[in-house]
Length: 191
Image (cartoon, rainbow, N blue to C red; front, side, top):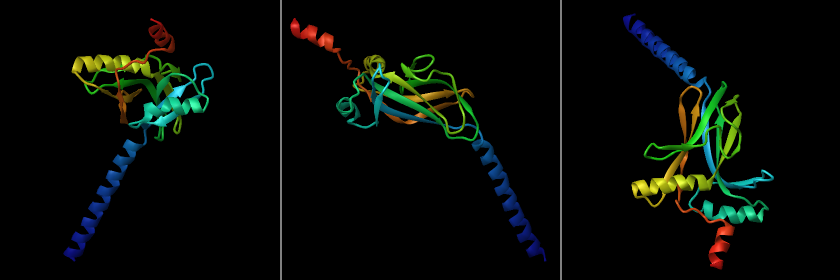
């Protein structure tokens, strides 16, 4: 009889431990959970039409050509999308780019285009802020000069209303080279 009692109490202890673990897990997963995605694209400033591609080694090279073929002319930009994949609402206070040296670059109130921040996201909602590549190239120039780098790695991250910061899993390798505008190129060729 004592062996059966011991087995029964061991099973009861294991089940109660599993139930407690499930409750702790459910508590952590019940709040708003953010997912941050970073893409590269081109945006037409006047019509607000855009074209994006996932980040990749040749993304910047092909984005202008592909966008032009689709009738979209404009600056190259980073599109940062924050999605609420949790079960309760959350607030996105800020989106910025962080260098590995922990320096943070951003624009208060949102990007150059897209939604203004802070923004409340209900479950399943998302918000997108768009940042002109030339802005990040200026920051990359500072990083590369300061830390003797040829490319500046930067991560997109979202600061939530809870104080938590969520970082994108993909990093952008930004070159410090700033493209000249077509009017500057014409002036240089005429000299």
